[in-house]
Length: 140
Image 1 (spheres, rainbow, N blue to C red):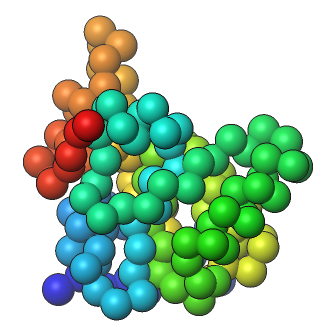
Image 2 (cartoon, rainbow, N blue to C red; image 1 turned 90 degrees about the vertical axis):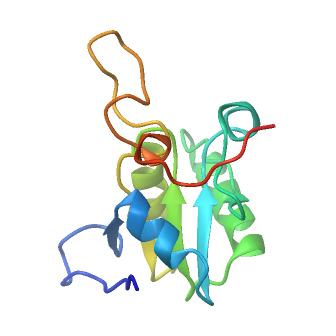
């Protein structure tokens, strides 16, 4: 069974990171939430993790970051373990950092993201990521 332990203080500006497989193992535990920070279109049409919550990260302005934090507070408690997922693990790092600054103490980035890195043909999903690993996901 997977566990999430925060790294030593100062290691990251948020609690830590987990692999997609570790995230899936943790997802069913009490007080653990997978939060997808992609756009509603990505969530719906590219696919999403069953049982995940959608809290969109648009964090390019102070107002957008504040809206993300407000939306996040409606979905999860600041002391809950939150596993953040985006396309390639870039937005989720920014979201984890912002949420930690606002008092969320157990924000974890899901490494590789949902689709993973771009390959030589500029395509995702062939090198790494949630879908490449073969973990459960749904599409609308």
